[in-house]
Length: 122
Figure 1 (cartoon, rainbow, N blue to C red):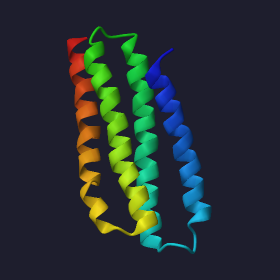
Figure 2: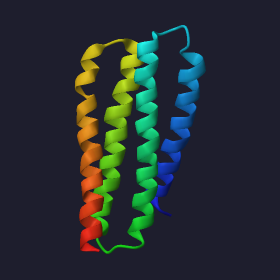
Figure 3: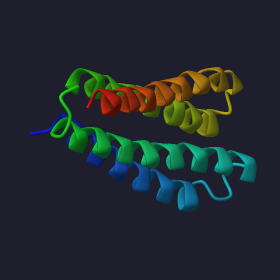
Figure 4: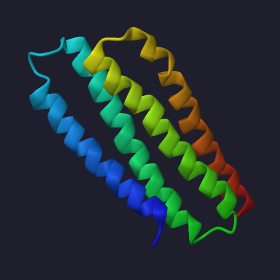
């Protein structure tokens, strides 16, 4: 069992479900600007669910599994902080949550850098 495949599938599922909720459940309840913010959260969640799949597949290929493990956890933390803060911002209107979003973005960047380093170490 590969934990990152499971986490990837869960996050991809949630991205589809949350995307549908944003398109249908939020219409008329929040502003168009807030719907765009929601969509950004969904988009980044789906991209990084794909990143989690990549991590899972690379773990069988490269010996740098510690780096890849770090990348996977960075992606998951990024999803929670980046996408999660955007979802809560959209639903609550609490703008201070926007301060959390960049921390998720940094986690995403760290994950991608760790994949690069793992690939270079091969």
